[in-house]
Image 1 (cartoon, rainbow, N blue to C red):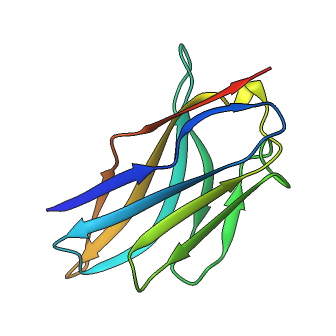
Image 2 (cartoon, rainbow, N blue to C red; image 1 turned 60 degrees about the vertical axis):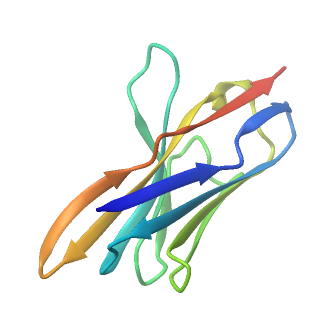
Length: 119
């Protein structure tokens, strides 16, 4: 089993910054893509940013130029640097990984971390 633990959420004023971290542990064989998703009250969960095992990234249009996703493959860790935060960034942020073992893929989710941006 693979376990994901997020940290770094909190309350920040508009224009501020936060850095989210996600640590994967357990029976890890290989992690392909990793990503951050978010879900605001009354809305569907949406992709914020993703990063492939080789380092290529993609971002939601709403966060381009403000958020930066990165990963440390040696530590099985994922990060999201969030700058110039806006009230509309308020949501629960979830870490997701595409875990691969013997050619079989499985998706794992963290428990989520709350990010609240005040105006």
